[in-house]
Length: 276
Image (cartoon, rainbow, N blue to C red; front, side, top):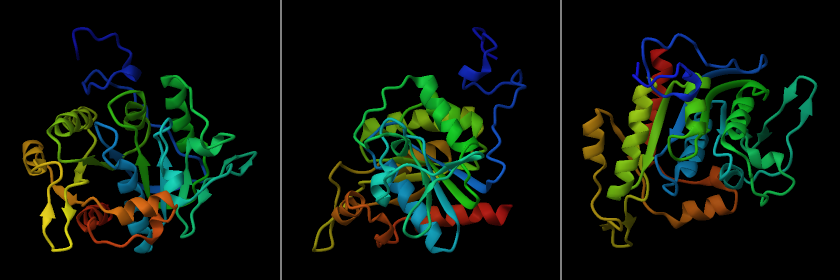
């Protein structure tokens, strides 16, 4: 326990013996969610949302019931990637997620706005409560894997997700720049303090593949292996800069993407079921 502890565990990320209270919330009584995976980064702009979308798509292709809880409330990209818009259906017992063309269930703050371009001018506690309600008030049904697309950084929302949702693990998304590596280290350290398992690191925008077959390191040589070794975790994948992926997201067609880059991450997710 820190010498400066004010005993307000709800605003603290420290893991100490004095912490007795369990802040985890129960999902809606009609939701049965087997595995919850957080997709995190320490910095925006590294492609966290596209990795979240691709993982949900790949697990769906394997026959799993998948869902995406979009916790990036003020910068939601998930609805665009799946081509989803409109308001969720509601009833006396709760709210229903929107469903993509291939059956992936999605809930995002964008669905609560009159126009998708309206800004979410909300303070941190309100944003955190909205994310919590996406877990407690939405009727998800039977879900094998729920992917939580978290906002960058280590602020209110990541802390709320870490404390309120029963995370089975997180995947950290990064890119090759040294600055990003430093910031991502903070996210990894935060997960460690909250006793959340880290499944591994995915490096996005790792290279561009030339027509001649050569890999061009646009952002310089990757140091993701060093970062992974430092924290004793695995590098699950390295994704290239690919115009087809960007186009698929822009057109709401992420479910049609092709590529085996994330096989290592999918294998890590499969192992969670095997360990159960």
